[in-house]
Amino acid sequence: MIKGKYLIHRATFFVLLLSFLSSKSQTNGDTKYPQGYFANPLNLPMSLSANFGELRPNHWHMGLDIRTNKKENYPVFASADGYVAHIGIRPSSFGKFIILNHPNGYSTLYAHLNEFYPALEKYIREKQTEKKSWAIEIDFTEKDFKVKKGNEIAKSGNTGGSQGPHLHFEIRETKSDRSLNPLLFGMPLQDDVAPTILKLAMYDRSISTYEQTPKIFSLQKTGSGYIIPKIPILKTGFKTLSFAIQAVDKFTGSQNGNGIYTARIFKDEEPISEFVLDEIDYSESEYINAQIDYPYYKAGRGYFQHISPLPGREERIYHLYNEDGLIHLDDTLQHTITIQVGDANENFSSASFLIQFTDNINTNRSARKPDNFIPGNVNVIEKTDFEAYLPARCIYDTIQPVYNNTNSTLPNAVSALHQLNDNSYPVHEEMIVRIKPTIQVKQEWRDKIVIQRNAGNAILKPVWQGEWLSAKTGAFGSFIALVDLTPPQLNSIGKGDTVNLSPASRIVFTPTDNSGIKSFHAELDGNWLMFTNDKGRSWIYKFDEQCPFGVHELKVRVEDIVGNITEKTWWFKKYPYTPPKKKVYKKKTTSKKTATKKKK
Image (cartoon, rainbow, N blue to C red):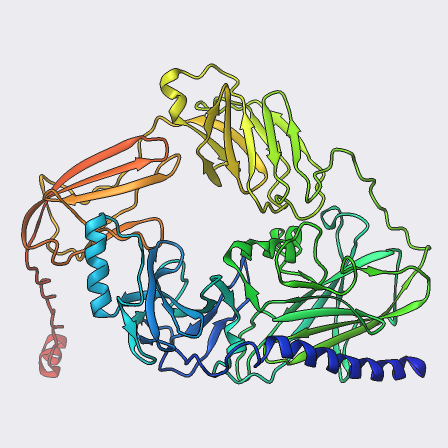
């Protein structure tokens, strides 16, 4: 048990902390974000399945996911007066979405919609037909489609990258298009529950975070906050160090674990570093890979969020209170470390412990090598038939390059298989890889070459630079150049000279290809036919007014990324259809009198 002087310091600390939090709330609270201006966009009690800043693969979640009772087609209402500024229809992303601009300098986004309100839906359909494209993006002016607060603007749905019915809702700063945390605007959600801090990870910051396995500590909640159980003093051989946390947050009355809003760390009552997830630009969202322990996450072990930044980060979420945001132990005295984790409603949990540097602990530091990839620098690796160019904003922490190559046995390979590290290291700005083929490439093959990364995990379309193939990539891994002469495969819609589609409600094509599908085009009786591609794999046409009853010719053209083309034509008939009635078989019954006679 810690007595005396420490308890006095602890009381003093919390007075200072309250002052610190008060000054922060002046920045992020009512004085900056208008309270109550934006209404709940659904006529349902607001309940969230995800909040702003929640951790996702390669991005922070940029808004609120509002529950719709696992159902679709609830009316979606304008959250404030304004006008339709933009609509989009994107596969494997927002699906159908709408952006409203408001007179106070903010915009709201509503995504995963099933349809827009009738006048807008009609206009969009005309533009899709005009452009012969289901996927579409359109900007509008203030004169085009005005809305009032509470007007119905759409129906909720499950389109795009959604994994279940809900409404994705964002508030943005119109001028910068930066996404803001909607919970700072006084959304109708009760929240008096502080975050739960689960685990703590400690890093030696004299070396790269990628060159070590962090020391992980489980935390225990007590009446005065979280502690590291059975470790009254955390002794370490690290002179420069940092911490990361595992933590979740919940709203009052909800068991759903959401992301946290902020975490900050103090040494002896002095603030060192913090992150605050209040404003994020979409161009910055991939920096989540610098905020988490990326190798730990890629190993499938969950998320740790760094409270102190990595050297290669540039996003705005971190605020430093010393030169580097790291903890420095320059003596052998005991020091108090306090970590505060909070939500957007200023509910905070605290973890506190003593730490002490000692020379008696072997740190097993690896020596820095001269060929290391260094964040903030341009890094290059050059081999006989492989090169990689990493721009200055490519990596977040120091990486030791590991390269090897092997001859490929694939029949369509035109190069060796080159391995440069693996995808447990994140890449921010794309790097350039260059491969020199090991065989003579025929002239007619030169436009049919792709670079395959990680055994088909990604297909890159390279350009020729002399006798080298060059492509941009967003990940480390294995790279090989292949020739693709195989056109896409396209499923049939049925058998016979004239396929009977009267019983069908839709036509579905799921083309496959070695290199990936570049375009899909369908025509019905010579006119463009709109197939949707909402989930990014299948193209679907649901029978509507584009296909009147009768006999029709359907032509489909599919092209892959190297220009191989498959074209197919079918004749089909479509007439009113009534499913046959199921026959009801009555079970034969035997009377008691007949059964008695049979026995006799």
